[in-house]
Length: 111
Length: 115
Image 1 (cartoon, each protein chain N blue to C red):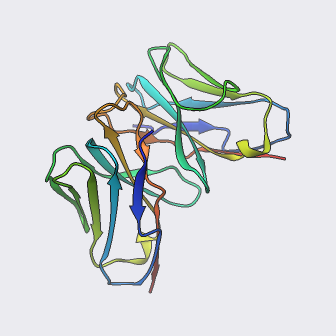
Image 2 (cartoon, chains in turn blue, brown):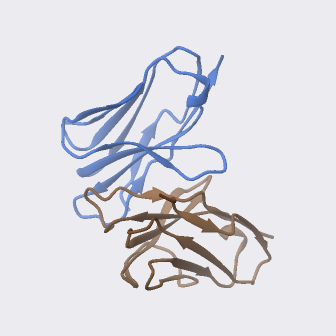
């Protein structure tokens, strides 16, 4: 599959802070997805992006499909303790049939 | 509606044994994909089934196999287990699968430990 580079690998922040994470690929993607995984559970879809330049929000979460189609960003505003978990970017390339995943960003939020 | 259901949630096997994992997709979803998740390699695609046919396959050895039944339920089997097969095995379903607007909905996974 396609290699996705996700950064940062981990973040340790205080409640109320904003968070940014990003994902880049070596090839063009036609769909970008952001998932969150809690311990002992499967990934849960947060936001789906289908068009270059698209900016989509889901509550305090905002994600963007990069103009180059090789990157995507996820922002979390005013973080709260329940935001703790691992966030994964994922996407489909033009030639791919499998959903490719980044290695994840582990987020810890202290009260 | 019910989500993706995977059984068993946890299991322990010894090297050389074989294991079968089960997945019931969301009602109406015809595509089922399987992923292996490990701390070192992350989420890696195993295979995808649609209408009882394996449509796509990842880069795993032949010890990993699967099938899909007429009701879209799927099973995956790993034979001759190795220590490195210890992982969380995730099943995901979608309406039609294979890229595009078909986002995957994941189950909670089956945690396999090989001793």
